Structure formats: C-alpha cells, structure tokens
Amino acid sequence: MDNSSASNSKGKPSPAPGARRTRRVRMTGAERREQLLDIGRTLFAERGYEGTSVEEIAAKAGVSKPVVYEHFGGKEGLYAVVVDREMRQLLDMVTGALTAGHPRELLEQAAFALLDYIETFTDGFRILVRDSPVAQSTGTFASLISDIATQVEDILGLEFKARGFDPKLAPLYAQALVGMVALTGQWWVDTRKPKKAEVAAHLVNLAWHGLGNLEARPRLIGHRKN
Image 1 (cartoon, helix red, strand yellow):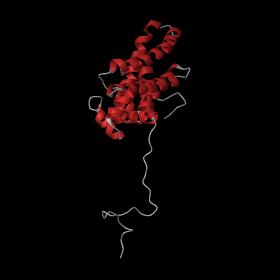
Image 2 (cartoon, rainbow, N blue to C red):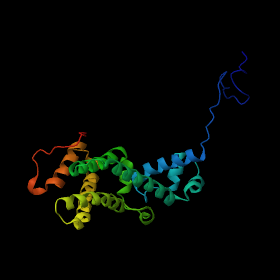
Image 3 (cartoon, rainbow, N blue to C red):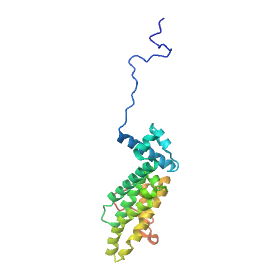
C-alpha cells in the first residue's frame, strides 16, 4: 500500500487535507501597551514592585524584554503608569460620588466610593497601599488620601460654619474622617466581612455620632443600600 499521501519524506505525518496553520495576530502598539499594563498591574499587586521583574512581565506577554523597555523605559516606568491610573480612578470615583446635600449622606457616599473601588479594582488598591521605591515620582496613597480629604474639607467647612463651629478645624476633621475610611478599607480588602453596606453604615455611625452616641443598629439614610 502506498502511504506517500499520509507522510512526508522524513516519515512525519502530513497535515490533514484542508488544515490551515493558525496565524498569530500581531498587536498594535497601543494594544501591546495595554497588555503590558494589565500584566504588570496583576504582578505588582501579587508580589510588589521589588518582587516583580521585567523578565517575568515580558514572558507573560510573550515578548522579549526590549519590548517592555521600548514602551515604558523599564519596570519603574511601567509601575509609574499603573499607579497613576489607579490614583486617578479612585479620585474620580470619590469625586463623582459626592453629590448629596445632607452631610451625613455625603459621608455615606464617600465611604461607598472607596469600598466600591476596593471591591472592583482590588489589584489597584493593593498596589496603592504598598510602599514603593518610585513613590516620590508617582505619588503615594497618603498623598491621594490627602487630595480626597481636601475635597471633604470644603464640605465640612461649610457645615462647621453653619453650626457655629470653627471652620479652621475642618482640615483636621477631614483628614481624620478620610483616614478612618481608608484604613478600614485596607483591613476590609482581605476580610470582606461584614458586607459593604454594613461597613459603610458603621463607619458613618462612628463619624457622625462619635463614640459617646453610637447607634446600636446603625442605618444608612441615603438611597443606596448595598
């Protein structure tokens, strides 16, 4: 029997009739950049800046190291872009959430905004709260919290003035309130208990009533319940 149709001259099976070799689709420069950012974001969240190497980023992307250097100049450049994106994402979410007129509901919205970010962009949050050797060039979580506190400060200043309190103390209270929510968020990112709405309610309970007037069963007054 003639088997020439089933194998080539070296004895290897010939491709089945009609079979086609799959061609790899070449990414555009923008697509490659986004791929490297996604991979870097995941690795930085899992291992931190020091624990992540350009070699590993390139290997996971299926490219050589020079491609990473071409797009970002190195690991530090990639990290800086990742951090900048996450900071803008969080700041935009908090800023966009502060729409209520009642001060207590504004506190609820701020708490929900940070918890929403942690829940949706967990990797990004883990990156932001890590100490990094490039923090001075990219900003820090502390500086981001300070930016958010500045926005809360304006709201508190008006409320303090309306209630006869010294508006000069608004910056102090703004830092305290935002810091309380941020640190609780760092704890909640791993535990995820209680549920998000319950965490927000307890944060606002402490912020609004103080330790001397805590509600036994805190409730949310805004329209959002989860």
